[in-house]
Length: 159
Length: 269
Image 1 (cartoon, rainbow over the protein chains, first blue to last red):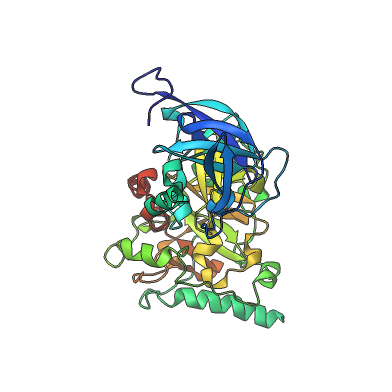
Image 2 (cartoon, chains in turn blue, brown):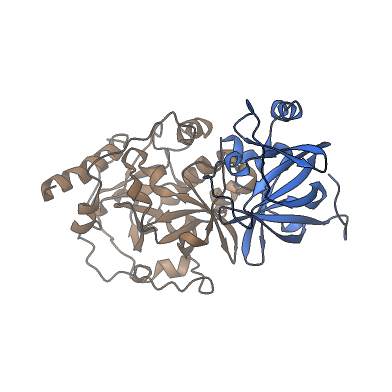
């Protein structure tokens, strides 16, 4: 993963796109974000895994949209005016993740990031790359690569 | 539930805690009961800038310590029904964690108890607990809306509390010390978080009381820690369980070792 900028080789600054889910703020590396879309109709895919909401047509390309809340073990929520689909690219695979809202892009020094507790046995705990205090709140940094395991990424590819 | 039944419930629980206690060590009448200075404030750093901490519990006791520290009211709040947790649940890390922590060989003795020592008393879900002041860090006021929960974590992980000293991972103490008596209501009315010295973990508790000074012979020490490894012993006089925070920290962080300076804790104890 490349850094978006590097003020110091020892303590690079990374940019993170922040989004909200269940009143908490999460961050994903800006280098993995392609674009942010308003919510539009998501076509369900018969036989798809439960974490797949469906597919959307993105300028002629089919993009699979992941139910981020379900993946994170959060309760489902209604679609609202602020609901967004964040199009991300992970290992040359493009998917969408549904979030409650997208907030901003923040700059974080590597040294500002703290490791998250490593006490969870649940799969979802693996997605948390770290945490960081920013603007008076705790930002949870998500490691998108680990949102799905290898088999699941392959499964998405075949949808 | 009658008063007798309530007393019996509490006594049963303490009896359970004593099951593993060493029979040869007798509890003798206490000679020294309370520090007359204020050991809580002298040992603990209570951060004034974080939250106004006006709990009367943090002032030193003027009370007659012959009285049990668990009041009738507290006894009445003890759960009548017991919600047993599934010990096979993946969230219940204690069983596996205990196996990972060196127990039998090292846990029988605690270096901080060679001479009289100060303890802080606090309540968790109706149970009075004591911990050596030397193992404690800072006391913060518990505000549920200031905790940031993290998905995918065990149920006993309440969230991260941002403090001036850094992020503190908050543990639901009741789930650790008495999972067999944990009820849904045990999470209600948590008021304080007590950080463990040298560690970025804190214990969520219902009430902070005051400090007491214990003579080693006031404690019924355990030498076998195959179960409840965090329990150093019990103090019948005060009807409380004495926690071994060093072991508790090891249990908590057995999977989280990089983030907790166990050696620092050990060094303090």
